[in-house]
Image (cartoon, rainbow, N blue to C red; front, side, top):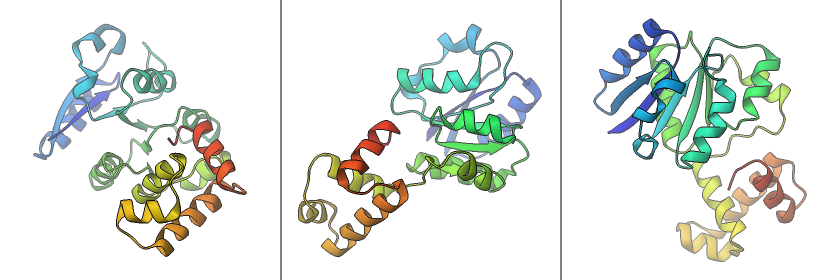
Length: 202
């Protein structure tokens, strides 16, 4: 069972999302509507994913993402907000969240996003993809396997070593390597690693 924490200052919204997710046996849900007052009640070490708003009266959601990821590096974070303005989306994406959803998201997409992010992927609301990629060309969506390959490249493993480690062909690894360089706009492996470090991909 995955543990999910929801942070939002609207109690009715919190109760609705908690009820929705709690009906699914794969999720255990906790809620906070005032982070400053209640955060000490939560053990982040056992939380797998956080859903939170951007604008809350007691704390800035964007800064909170950075704080949460510093305290618990394993933590996945998804913005669940009503903000779809390009300027706010751009600012929010610089905090390196794992997903961004609008509050009008239906229950199917919400659960899909949570599952995808828990699997190690990024997930952005379909309505926002164009905005996200337009306002921040640094945002890329790597698959779980591409992240595994990137990590091994950063460890200075050769293509042959990576293929043996992941039990796939050399050609497959070469394809992943080329896709990583293309997606990040890098010229070579050195540029790829530099990009990965600067954008918290490692």
